[in-house]
Image (cartoon, rainbow, N blue to C red; front, side, top):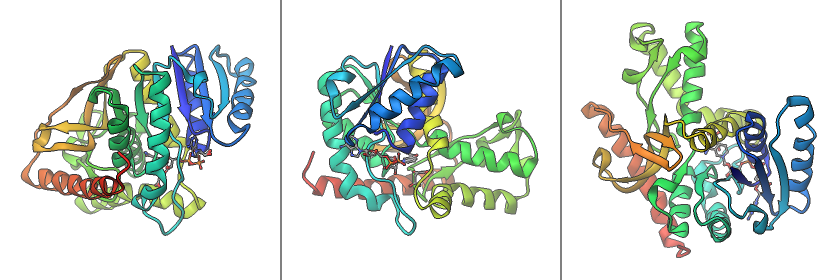
Length: 311
Ligand SMILES: NC(=O)C1=CN([C@@H]2O[C@H](COP(=O)(O)OP(=O)(O)OC[C@H]3O[C@@H](n4cnc5c(N)ncnc54)[C@H](O)[C@@H]3O)[C@@H](O)[C@H]2O)C=CC1
Ligand SMILES: O=C([O-])CC(=O)C(=O)O
């Protein structure tokens, strides 16, 4: 199995490292436009193989997509990250063009690849990659839900002083301030979290989760990479190992949850065919309203891209 990661920056290099260390594919190609960056990082990574005991070959390529040919999975992280004071949507004018040209090159050399988008604004970049690749909807998906639920689970683990491993959670909607964490579907080893935390504490955790990306941007001056890179690598693993894992991911909806032709996060089953099923869980009227509002916020930015006439 072969995986390509486009964008050898913070998120891309972290994702490549974690995929390589999992020892689940024979080759990871790192690709970037900055001369020598991907070759250097791929070589540095390869020199960790004898220390960390894995066999995955890591190959770097400056803008040479022939090196990515025949990839089973491609992760697209190329694009600019936001700086303090910016929203993810502010990145649209630069990143839409980057994701478009990268997707064209990716699909030329790996027409059957499953494409995982990471670049922001996430839901809309997934739409761009889907439109440009002309792939089927099960093969183009976005990474956000694993990251957002990881933040939610980490904050809950801290508040409850329990292992984050024992927290299961569901979160839906777009990857922005309108995302919809669902406490009704959040448990600690099967115990509803609503029985373990008071409403005010839970509300504070939900609010912090929604602003989780911004909290890190304000601390570091650029956006996060360890958790995003790990989350994308977990999606790669589920696909290449055909694990049938259930994660919230950004996918194209065609009627599910009453939403049409929109890209937002919902729980899906991930396996060798990419998105193998969209799970439809029952929502209360309030939860459905929040999901519809989140989808509307994504649609506004999809309309901005449509107005750019690049698709
Ligand atoms: N979906 C999510 O949850 C998350 C999304 N992100 C997004 O991921 C993107 C990458 O973030 P970082 O890795 O922190 O940024 P970074 O600046 O560290 O890396 C981006 C890399 O993309 C490369 N690049 C730019 N244009 C390219 C092109 N046409 N072809 C190939 N490579 C190109 C740059 O040279 C750079 O090395 C940003 O848009 C950021 O907002 C970041 C974290 C989480
Ligand atoms: O906040 C950002 O710009 C990057 C991102 O999507 C995240 O870390 O959730």
